[in-house]
Image (cartoon, rainbow, N blue to C red; front, side, top):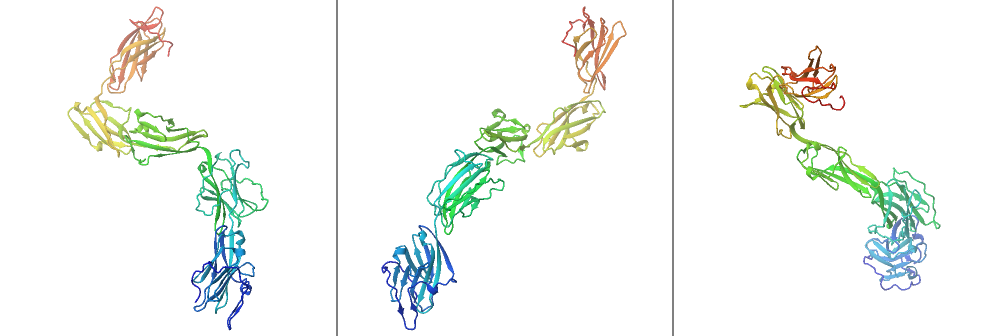
Length: 607
């Protein structure tokens, strides 16, 4: 039977006995000598790696046919002619022996199934080499396993240098100190101090120098865990390609005195997004990984970056008049902003509780928002480096229809005359439906839609009073998706008549041949009116006729000096003229025209 139990290195491990040669009639002859003809270059090599100070297990194939028996197992290192470990079962027992001078107590052997494992621990750099396991059996030919052991030596230390535009800046050069070696990538390193502050747009050169390590370590730069660049093992500096948007700057060549240095350099131009990122240099050997790292938190100063949004629970497409409106402002800045504020249509907003405007930090609240508060809103922030503005938020306040201001509300018409009554409204959305009714002192009648013409925000009806009962009030309503207008538009239909006589006429400025006369207009009879002045020289044929379409104010020129004039002022509409307002102009002893029977008012210069 083959050996299937675990063999432990306790007992029977004295000094190595002299070479033993045993001859069995008709059997193989076994010699405790080097691999010799069994170590053929064509045999495959098993690759094994272990970390210095750790351990490694070297496999050896001990599989054999049923009924056969393992008699002798020998381990050799490199070209040594004598074994470093022996397992001997030729005499029925299990004799174990190791080379105490070379291996000491660092080597053990376990055999189980079809494989035997030679354990070496702790490893030292001198353990690296090619190992050969030779196995002799009772019947089948000798088998050989070749194992190449690589002893990984971690880097001895890291030095990190940060430069701006190729020159170290006072207070910004950070040199790493030697660390305890990190044997596992799961190790949690302590965070080093910050690097900076730098201004956004500065050109920064990051250099990481790894000293020692076998095999030669790779050097990589990480930014918040993402690979920035990789440096291949070399005694010359390895300059990684910078970020695509960053132009490279030259790095002077460097060679260590002993050639045992790996350098990783990268160039970056930080922006505001890089503020707070963790820059980490990692020097790492492979198989198994032996890692050393040095980290710096990057600090970048930049002007504010501002964004604005509607409150999370707000539907920006359905902001109704009377609802509360929430706007949120987010600011990223270093140094932090000293002032955050809002503008409405370019006008800065201030807290005004009585108007329902609340400003708290970056939040703007408009309580019971009105349609007048529609428009664009922007958030702004300032710090010592400048001011940042958000994109504009458009606040579209929806509201039910209301009557437009400054529209004609009284229509004076005669019987059997047509009046085109127009109702204009304001609404959002503007898609509206109109409804009309006519009110008198005795009844209210809805006007059929066939008599109504509507387009956009305006509706018009043609109304003709036929009797005295047809005079009254027209009411206009409109409705949209938000609701019905609260109060209708009101239009008064009154009988048309002549204007009323102008009154309170006076002379406000008089001279020897001119005078300004001002009156108050009387009622217009429900129709547009204009005004006429007629002045006639008493005792003569000279007359003056003037017309004005605005208020009854006249500048009368061309009067005969020293005369007396009778003046009449009338209001006129299409129904006729009013009764005249009479006044008499006379002259003072100084020859200045004034209103007869009163002291003349002389007001500055002639307008």
